[in-house]
Length: 302
Ligand SMILES: C[C@@](CO)(OP(=O)(O)O)[C@H](O)COP(=O)(O)OP(=O)(O)OC[C@H]1O[C@@H](n2ccc(N)nc2=O)[C@H](O)[C@@H]1O
Ligand SMILES: Nc1ncnc2c1ncn2[C@@H]1O[C@H](COP(=O)(O)OP(=O)(O)O)[C@@H](O)[C@H]1O
Image (cartoon, rainbow, N blue to C red; front, side):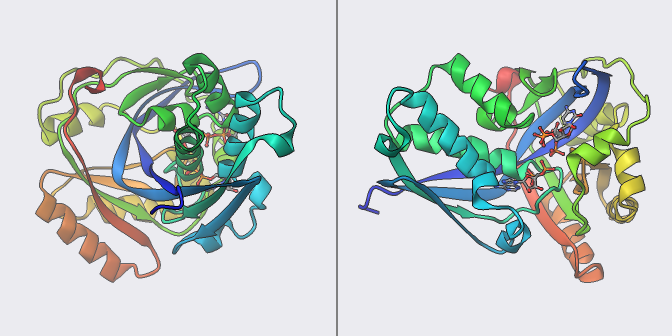
């Protein structure tokens, strides 16, 4: 493209486990969670323009039809970045961008779609405007946009602590074959957290490294997603998604991601994941089903 258009991926996030370890005075919950990114996600494009605008397209764009453009995390991230980069210029004098978001992952689904989009906007617009915000200010801006935005900005497997603003190196991870299933029920994050009733435990670090999918599944089986119980109460379809994944041949572990309702199955081999995805698609034509893979990672995400 020679009109100056740049493009940035916004990969979906999965929480391999999620422990709620406490609560802050402002009501936000403290987490210990292992987050990683899958090879599925959305794409954001930006072209230099006067002012900021957003077009949303793609198969899941209708899911955002009730979200006003100004409330879209892409435009919120863009406006905050623009103001932070040029604090002394009136809004109309700041460089702008025409943004296009291709929405392909379910909304309010535990996959951090909006957060991934906001993080992609921060990365993309710094490139488009050829101007970077100092790392500490960028981190604060990201955390202010949403609890999942810092990890999405890092874009690497990480252990999330605090409410997500504290990122620690992830254990070494083998390549993972996953099947993601969303039973088509949006689950609002705030309602799921509100549904927690004092099931707090102390988190222990994962045994590391985890050399194989089976060893990782074994280690993860000692862990859980504390938000599964309130999410299953709000959306019983989560139960069915978990049972359906567990029943597939070769499924090592089935678990919910984030605040749901998306669940993932961990498989040892790509053919087993592909077969499971096809079988679930055929049995549940109304569900969003995707097979996905992640690359092996070393300690410290390197
Ligand atoms: C649960 C997680 C795990 O990765 O994933 P998702 O389900 O969103 O994918 C995240 O912590 C979600 O982060 P994010 O989606 O950015 O949450 P926000 O929009 O900031 O929060 C929505 C509401 O959920 C509650 N909330 C959120 C995060 C948190 N650690 N404790 C909370 O109690 C608060 O009531 C907040 O107002
Ligand atoms: N670009 C966006 N993509 C998805 N949701 C967005 C976006 N911008 C704002 N939102 C709002 O954020 C809420 C949470 O969306 P999402 O990030 O998909 O949830 P989750 O983190 O549970 O996967 C939605 O209800 C939606 O109204």
